[in-house]
Image 1 (cartoon, rainbow, N blue to C red):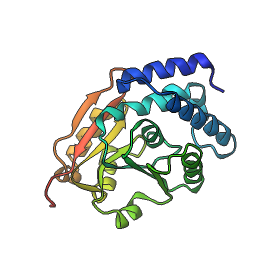
Image 2: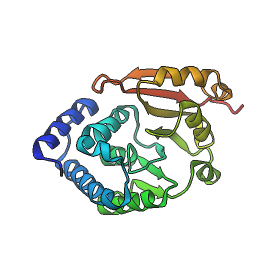
Image 3: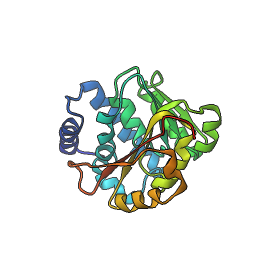
Image 4: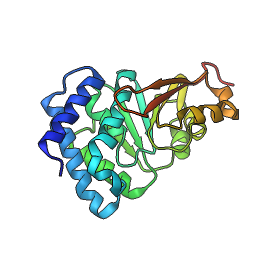
Length: 222
């Protein structure tokens, strides 16, 4: 269980990152989400056991820096959503009518995601798809303005998986760690480099060693 002091510290950090007060409803939704995740994790191993003692910092806070970069009235895909980071965090804090689709190929994780969407009454802004990104793109070709990701391989792989999902001019927003610059160099040397504009790299000041890499899909089909 997470103690009250830990939650208060979490809310304070979140407000600094998203630059607005957190409502009481958002606080309760977030607490409920994490309580259910910790219970399910005992049987389904949804997140690594080593991250549980620092779950708020390692998962919740780490997902929040994407929020200021997103826009309402846009369709967002979280590919490889896992236990819901960053997608469910975005769904809780983004105001309607933003639409977030959680794409997760592992059945046990997809079932958990659907359970949380129902429990938190997020059905009007959040859908769960139990499939790989490659299959999802067959029915959702060029549909998304944003593709977000926190733990899906390298930047080059993410660029490949995202291309068919994105509208021309849409963005990949990838949460990355200390290897960000190395991954950017590898991406620039890959064939996927020609499908996107020059990567933008920004450090997350509130989280040491964390970065966001942004890729914009070229505005014309190539």
